[in-house]
Image (cartoon, rainbow over all chains, first blue to last red; front, side, top):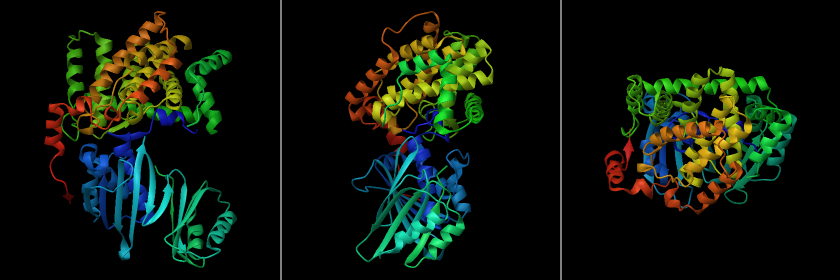
Length: 222
Length: 298
């Protein structure tokens, strides 16, 4: 139980809704962190209550603000669509049914530089808190409360051990970790939530490990 | 979620240590999160600054909500007060106008402090800023009052809920009124026991309140409930300061709120599938503002 006084009197945020606005900003922030850049193109599929009420809550503005790297208390949030246009980001909103998921769920399909494609599936679970449940087709469980390292790698013995050894050497403590794969021997994904900041040099070293295809790092969400 | 302390445990600890509920909360937060008292006070002072600014912003009456349903009412009420016409009296009207103001800023995508939620963000600033003016409290005392409110809110959040989706509106606006009543009594110089009596009386009055937002938006009836809850908290604070007791202790009122929230059907818990949300006028509003366009490209 880690609720603080500032979870009760706080957060400072742009209204109107902690789940539909503040939470949506954080979902956008996480998507941006996973892509590792501001997307050139984002197709945003809205489910359930998000699909029903996104305009009235500014959920669309909030998601785009997150993709642009803004925080939940950024007073430019109402102008996010204009800012996205200026930044050359193409955005599309599609209300849809994403199946058996939380009522406040979104799927963000992003294209970045060099035709890099990433998608995330995430939910706003109340009070501005979020949960990312899928990264591309990999099941994950990301809260954005920690420093996060995402490693895409070939599913073979020793890769995870090499990553954790490297983190240990950098004095980075692991809070949570999850490894998943599409099938045996195919591409796999390791998501590591850590207590300490992941320095660029550490992420670069992870990228250089054998059988690692790519790695991204995210800061705790603001 | 693991259960934290109860209100009676907080009262006992405050009594033993000779601290107000606000100072007790500062102490325990400082210990739990290993943050200095000074840093905690600074952070809360920043929240107070945003609260004050949102009240000023809202009274200007320039903001409209996304749907256009909300905005300008705080200014209307404030003008009536300034004209000396308020039938509830100057202090009460000032608090009510401020509550509308902050809630309107929230609905219009302005900057607010969730207290405890965005939907109920008007109650605490309205009551505390107004009571502070009446009793001549300093900002440092306001900061302590906000910590007292947070301490009570933490108990409610762990013993019951502060989410409309889980407990109905009583869990949001009821919790806000309860927290505001407790903090108002501490600000006015009442003891911790009276403060908690005020909290119990404020929350009791709002038990059973359902969350039935028109078109699913944080606008109708949310904004005006902030004004009513602020008035409720001030009446409860006055009653407690007069020595009136709740009869049912706050811990048991919180228990009752949780029990009522669990018994409430989902249609009355933020889903917009019951209550005011399914009245003919609500459907018309929903149609007018949200019906257009299933796909949106830009």
